[in-house]
Image 1: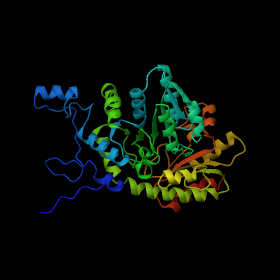
Image 2 (image 1 turned 135 degrees about the horizontal axis):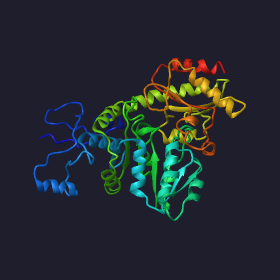
Image 3 (image 1 turned 30 degrees about the vertical axis):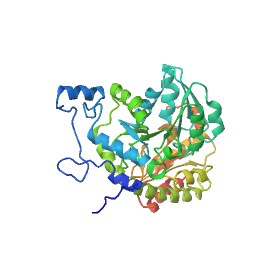
Image 4 (image 1 turned 60 degrees about the horizontal axis):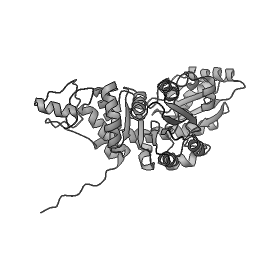
Length: 403
């Protein structure tokens, strides 16, 4: 008799295509899309048990959906965590995390180089409810350790950061957090599990804006928190049920299909980004290029170890200028000269997108906050897509060569 083979661990590429592939009685090959707001229960007793959490089963669209559950299981498998909770957007995932973990009097330590909306949410909005925060240098582990207080409950980093692509040492921050009895959360939006798995380096929570590379084609909004089963079930799920940050089933289905090509997209777009960064470093109109894949990047060696030897698909550069006002005008000139690339503040698309962070993604910050974060008026961020690299370079050269 032939003995059944024991299952072996699958590669991330395979998990992105095969994990949580649930089929209905019809045997569909592609994941099914379940569009329903409610679920018929077999009996009153079963309904009571499911609503009480004593029995598995779907009860209401705000609490869960089979398509959404498939996305959560697949993303957790790719990140190497026990569970995942999806949300309507990346920012709603951060809000869910904070609402689930923090209360008045608690303290959070964050990178000062994080996404502008994240800085505002944690530094300003949560402060109204008594949550205290400290913002420190992204790359200085001693600054993170010095900022920790007895009331610190969470350390939150984004690596690489938006838009300077600063890279922090995840393992070092995990050790600091755990030594203080706190949790480490990592925004893995730029790298994705195709390039970086923070859980393997000690992170407790991995946050995603699925709007970006997980979808990959700029179609829908989505967010997620990957973590332990305890955190997802006991901390995040109650917030979801009460606050309704629910991911729509259609959006979940779109992101599920996006995950199938995540690895190949990230590799190809990263290769384009590296080639563009190398060209920009030779351009006389460019003062500085920020890209982890370049040896000139301050955390290049760390990024190559931590991000599977790949720099990612986002870079930023500063135009040469004598004053901030001139720098802003020159950055605008480069963007307004584009004929192929898109002037768009999103990222993670197969199309190359360019933006001016100081007036868009970080526009709600004060000038002082932008200076601390290193976001200058002459900075242009480019989320590199899948166009031919010669066309990407030529389009940017049209503006840079006429400065």
